[in-house]
Image (tube, rainbow, N blue to C red):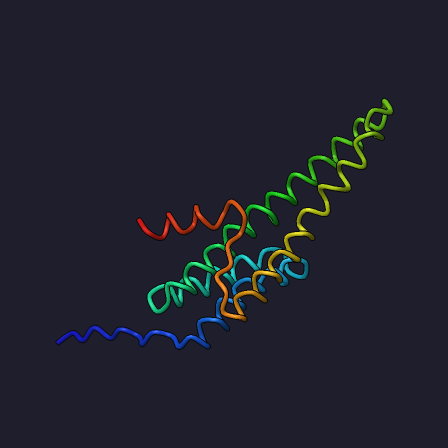
Length: 141
């Protein structure tokens, strides 16, 4: 005899809390590297069948952090390396401002994630620019 136990849906208050926490996992990245991505992914996996809102918000947080934290970090590292190598011929010195700006991309991602967390805690639907619609379409399939 197999009993399929479906967990109960989340209350609106719990939905807001878990969605907020999914976005705030971005705060773990400067301390631990990629634990923010892992934290948002765990929230998605745990609550994907209990709340479409939490599933959507947490999956957005995962994709956003992968693109802007991991991708931005790699891009900044490559730019710094190229600037250092090119500084031998003085051209690299002109690249340092670009490298500095690209270094700020992952830090800007932290601010954007905090904004998402605040909006979710207030019960608003938060969408990351360019990512929100893509994630929503992926969840609909």
